[in-house]
Length: 248
Image (cartoon, helix red, strand yellow):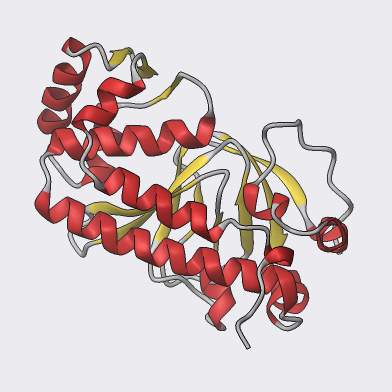
């Protein structure tokens, strides 16, 4: 068992953990370890044993699918509302996707063995909440897959920027066009063109690897409806677990 973590600053708490009852949070707290996450750090590697479940605070990570030629495409995004390593919920030792950090920050992590024993095997409040989140995350994966197949790079980039902005609560964050292109599964030139159009529209400012959100409303006008659909899925999943009743 790990030592109790140091206090997490107000405003940086993970929303899944915050949705638990005080008693359930207190029960899990001794198994949670605060960690700093670095840019492009791998939290979960596809097909490799999951070592920890990460509850993100102000970091943002992407679940990506890797192709045989080395290309990767984002299929899901997670931040303060979520966690990485969900395959453990369903009795799997490994995930089918890789999770990469693209905005560095803080998280609380739980060892896989502790997660299985204290969450999965016990069932109860935290298990039910995480099942709801997993269902919402699977819905996001389906929505993003449809988005990638149907919408323009500019729409997808605007949607992606809004999802990141929602999770970090600050106006700027590090981002290179190369990494954005990697996540969106497009050529770098496509991201550069989309970023230039968004900059001219006054929605963003970008220089030297630093992305700044200037006008959310302008971004929302460009983004496809997938942004709102994903937001609704995740909001519904985060109702406090101890207040959700099971139909009889």
